[in-house]
Length: 464
Ligand code: TYD
Ligand code: MG
Image (tube, rainbow, N blue to C red; front, side, top):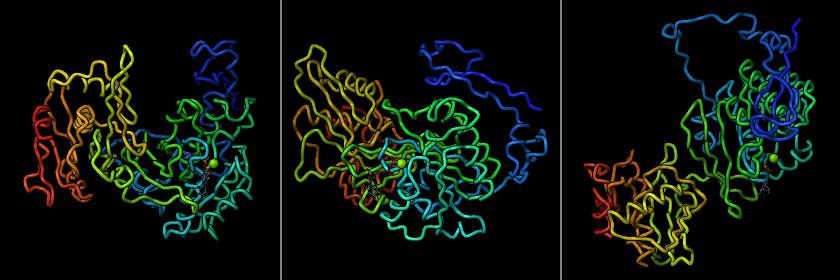
């Protein structure tokens, strides 16, 4: 017999404790601590699993030489939606768990329903097992059916279950043996053994832990939908992000039809990959040429705008960077960055002052990356500074000019990775000129693009 070891967990911050107390010693929250079955011993997994068809469960783990292990070809199953596959690092990995987070109503259920339907129709899913088991804890079977109907998915080979008890879900999944299991959403699930309410940290964590175990043992790909709190973090503790293999965020600007799927953690691929979709009346449509939506295509040249060639994951992307410099009524002028790093902006303004001789004292500086994209790479520096200069002088940059390059503290322009790729992307979108770091200029040049190589901020300023 296994004696159940119990512990306590704070529902606000997720910290594990050995005894109950009224106030959490970690986050200071009152009345947030509840009981949890902590660290279930492995034997109980075997007991609970029952029908895991014994994949490696009855044998004890042994120590092996890493060198002697055979290399197994990484199996990837395409979901049929290219933008999703790219973010996942090439397709679904059997036995992996993917967490998709996003604001309510952003389109998580829509995306997963569409992905499930295309996956079920793909050649990869024509084996004996049912391709997909879709577990809806939020919507009734009728609501899911109506949505599928609206999306034009007429006869999707999707098995549907409306259930919120994790024990039942896993028992049914073991019987059904689907290739893909979707849980919509993890916050609605509960484990019978726990007394806390569904959505509490203890419930979310334990539910996820059991589903992760199920995925690993049954080689099923599990998608967990997770809600995002007002602060933008995934509701539930950070441990949820540690438990799963891949964390995707589904984002979109309010009022915009565009949706971005971003990988923030991926054990099977690159992070910061970006998948771009547009929400239409027929569900989500893939945007295969996303550069088009991040450029605002002014009819005439405007000041304060520069076109940056950035990279999201493995893909070059053209994004318009906008800046506005204005007299400030405040003693402490504002430096506001939307989609760009605020500290980086402050640093670049200092470099611009010291090495470019342009001071911004007494002026507000606002910068923005068009289309709701978030840019974290330093290759945006040069475009940012040129946009600021353009706004400050109220003088538009030359039309069809693309820019990238990192700026160092001594005003030097440093090379960035994959310069040639970026230049080709710029040429593809009709750019005629480019200002880039010297080391990023390809020897053979790029057809249709006049390239200005710069080594310092001064040189870049002279060109414009
Ligand atoms: P949904 O997938 O339910 O969001 P989530 O699961 O993330 O909460 O998306 C709902 C929103 O998407 C809703 O506001 C309506 C919109 N929508 C469309 O615009 N077109 C469609 O075809 C569908 C199904 C939804
Ligand atoms: Mg939903």
